[in-house]
Length: 282
Length: 282
Image 1 (cartoon, rainbow over the protein chains, first blue to last red):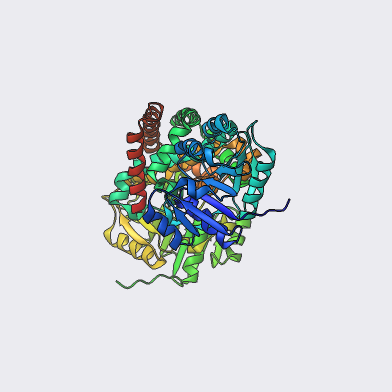
Image 2 (image 1 turned 90 degrees about the horizontal axis):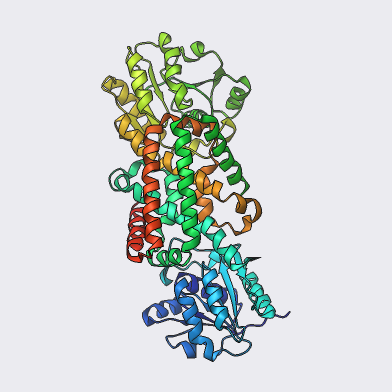
């Protein structure tokens, strides 16, 4: 399969959309990157940062020559964006996204995706930084992109989407959208909740005794500096899986509390040993 | 105050003791570092790694010329080690430790420290690595050392201990031992518990789908690779504070669970915003 791509349109030029646009141009994967957004001031930063070759606030115009359209919006806005562009999609136009919750998106979009234009993607990269000002094109290098096929997914288009992320420098894992949401809660969404809690619990120390804070605390709370709008959206969008994980965590804390209270050193040691051995596999 | 120090004896040549010995020699802070331990094979590694100028398994001999003795043992063994060396301490000999729990240690030792030899220290550095093989002398550079004065502490000796850690490259914070334990649970011991839980909960993914694991998970679980013996000891030694923190964490998880379940996006956003602002202060 020869991979020819002239124009990529990106709907939403924030941290992820901007980083992707800049990388596509740096790597010369396409000729044109059209940055689409609502705020011309931010779009102009995208131009200045070489994250797009042209920008527009007009959704219809922005996608009219696109070979592939990337929806890079908060999770809850992705299906709506698809609905808006649907009337203008040609048969061959590919639409994908970068949302970190997939169950609802893939289900909703496939219900209206009569032209089979959509393939769900989740490039598993990100940063506690956000916004077009902070883009890091290299963030995609060596990362993993999860593609979530649906029974309605067009196989040819999926192959092209795979190829697209590979060209960018990512490895591909395919996974059912529901399993994706379960796994991503476990390794990303739920750990963010834990990081928010650890940070908020240390409020007084951070404000008054910050010099005693070491590398361990800094590492474990790095992701607590994540954007509150993006993460409120993600958490609400994947609430079922996250609520399950929170329940399990409460059970684990309760079990550990018992072990510690009763000085069950052997059990405690095994719990830590298990964690260490697992962590050493990564 | 002129700082003259010929011999430092370190009881326990593991990761921390070994790293300290090597740094003392690299920086020429003293002439001799005597490494004291029970396992001659490990002590020989200490010699080879230039973490000591001489080694011995004989506690009495090991400390006889020491200007300062550093007890670098698991927290629960520190008071016992002090008891063992007590008969051989000269009036001017200074004894300090590197234990990360202080309440019990400082209380127990001060009860028997008739010669006022002891000053409690906690250099707030460490690694998920352990053992003499993995020493990292640079780990002390720029770190903070908490000194925990007791009403019986000899002020002159405390000044020398302060000077000692400063020469090594650390900044000093003084704090009551009880407050120390509360704060250190909050920013180190309790976060370790959270890291163990997050890692153990992801067991299946680590074993079968590790390619989807990204930087966020790696950072938040780095400390879960910590040694199980050392950490069982620390957790049991600081159980009162850690149990309180676990209870608070369960309440927080419960509150977040309610927010998420009821779609209280504004509250959730504020919770995350609060964490982000705190994290950005560090």
